[in-house]
Length: 247
Image 1 (cartoon, rainbow, N blue to C red):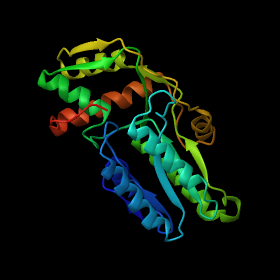
Image 2: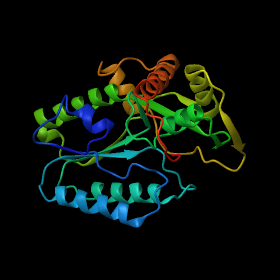
Image 3: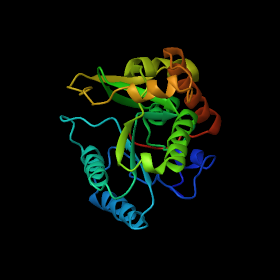
């Protein structure tokens, strides 16, 4: 059962398991400040928890002790709520930026690409870094976890989290440079030299395990760049130059 209709939800339709809930209907804008949006997600999630089925909840690796935005606080609260209940088989999947399709218009690559296409000025944090995974690789990983949960339920009774983070990160200026090359335009931006916290806690151990098991291919820096370029081309080809806010 898939809850949501975004990039991840649509991609998961290829491997949907009827006895599992894939909750892909969380708050998508990391700059969101309205409490009502977070309460709506919490209420919807609790309504599905009552069904007693295993649930996959998609969270974020970008949670830091310094950058305590409402979005980060909310994700942390939901994770603690879910993982504290060992009566259900909860899988919290903590994600980096997901590329490979247009998806959320407020996503970082969409914001940067659309701003450059429109010739709009924007600011970015100096030293900011991001990590990318292709949505197709994410689906392969979720399929592997779902099959394991389905075929060996007795071995998967504990709720747990997974950091599905690739072993490479990209500096924000490197990302902008790739976009400029793809769209043939120069970005109009200024660097905000204020403190940016890149100390988000994650590791690539789980992703490395998926590589060793043959679930996904080896992740190279060139592949990470390919994900970024493919995502940009999907935006340009789809004409997705709509107004949005930065993530």
